[in-house]
Image (cartoon, rainbow, N blue to C red):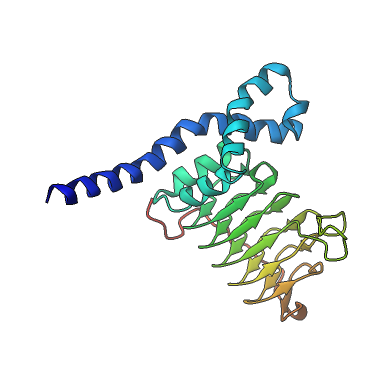
Length: 238
């Protein structure tokens, strides 16, 4: 009986230790995010700012540069929608009013993410914004949407990311991206466009067009008198 209690105590302690570490490291992580947003690299920041950033730099080295991805994965499981949004903003993302992030959103490169008012990010979305990702107003991303602003270049002898495979992505106002769609680097999706479920978008999408297939091709058009505005009331716990 005593052994069982000891094991349960250790397991519970480890569970809470995760959040103790996340909260303790968070202020330094905020400094690091602000540096990336303003200067791009830590070495370009003033000496005082670089000094404040050093604890987080060492922390990331300790975890083989995997701490932020681990931390943001955990944040994506937090029941409070408002806490998730607070963390993303604190780490450098520009997020408008009434934006909703559903559970298990994974964001990379928060300092290069911009989201307009009223946009809804569905469950399990992956927003890889390292090279720049701008999402307009009243955009609806359904579940399991993946957006990659960067990628490896299969033609490069060292399999690096190159200028051809790392370009920013722009998504216009009132775009609807269906479930399991994939948006690849350098794509611009015009205002009011619809990306059907399961699409792989490799080229620009014209405004108000409906695209489907792999690779995505225009199959229809959408009315141009769209007036809806999302007010952040999509289903969420809090």
